[in-house]
Image (cartoon, rainbow, N blue to C red; front, side, top):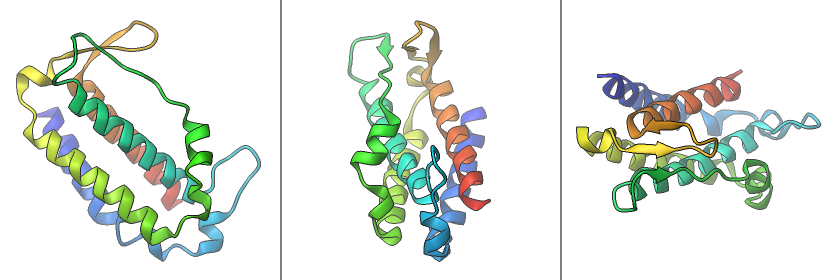
Length: 148
């Protein structure tokens, strides 16, 4: 039930924001404060997060268990992918399409798979259900930043 609620929230987030992001004024999207990401870069970070979680959500099905969660360098990826200079329509479409695929995966996952154990870098253990719901929470957090 928790995952079903997360999926519903996830779909609402996608529906509410896919058309909204391109309407944000470019000056607002690209405004930079030293040491902080611009709104465009936050959206780019959400693309990177979606890419890495799409890999995690699929890989866990066929790799050795327990699955070992690999962190990634968020700051370097945002810079390397040059989200600040990317067209907002392209960036939004990239974000939307990857996340639509994640929704499809989340809807198809079975109970056995949701219980697969995941070992984090600090050696604590979570399951796929937690990782999926946490992904939606993380997305929601950054969407609030983008809409503020």
